[in-house]
Length: 403
Image (cartoon, rainbow, N blue to C red; front, side):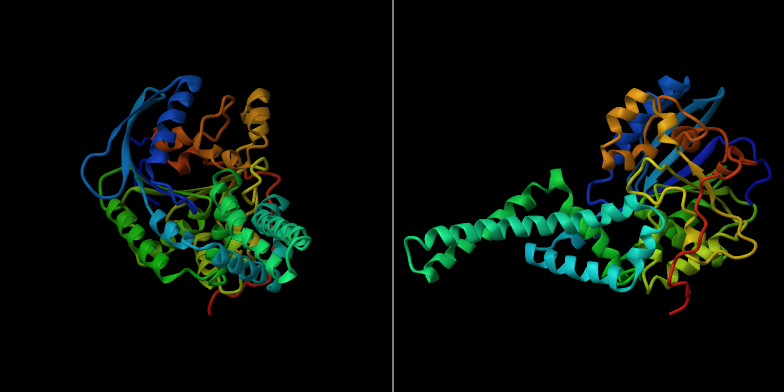
């Protein structure tokens, strides 16, 4: 797996695959700049960002000096935010229809009940937009009913029905406030995978093929490591992209080391759906390959992730010879000071991005040392035991890997 020297990385290519996020990828550059500087101060190393040279995908360059070794890392954000934005262009009525279809997909297939056997947090996160959108609808109905009853004191009842005309204005007000509530955003997120019952839509498959081409090109260069980072929904996209590359023989045995770091993964939300044949097949394949090192990092404090759940095992596709992933905990309650944990504890969406941020009591997991430090992913975690709290029970109803 990769070059003979497992010890030192001086040049690295990092490909970051975001989750379901409609925002421009510059947010990830600024997050890396701010949080990397904070982690460098805490941990006593040097990081410097500068603009990426040349064209291609959006990214940046990092110069790191860690353990007295200088490392140059080139970052690329593999963008699918335009696909996300297109999927979110739904009117209010269309969103409520989405709600009904998505709820039926998860409940009718039995996936919701099985997901609850793993972690309650991400299931609650999935139910939140359903409940909150229904509450919005109920409030709009109550206001309309109140106006109808009040108008009935003065005008014929059929004129009072006009009071229900206030409902679209109330629902539209809630939608405009979604930057605070995230109900519409989360509804579109879960609906995107549920619409095809776990299969990838054609536009996403096309974009994933482009991601694969970019990674394959990097594997032909003289860097020491190619590291793919998949966060949240980006983790299951990375599983399939990497599986395609390895199956096609596009990972050279004497080329750069290939590492895969999955962070805050929500793989079961997709792999538990009836038509997620491709994802289950790719999980099974990637779990046994020796062409890469795969480390999966989550934290029980992250209520939006399936913390410490082995995505291969819980999906019911683990088999003899499984090598990956190595399941590790970011252990927020230990790696964040009590004051910092108190500050972040109820900020659920912020905690879901903590893997990309600084820790004031850092442990073995350090995003900036992994992406800009002198050791490969495999070397950094070589010999490390998986978390003793990991969940490996197969609870998925759907384990078939072919349509």
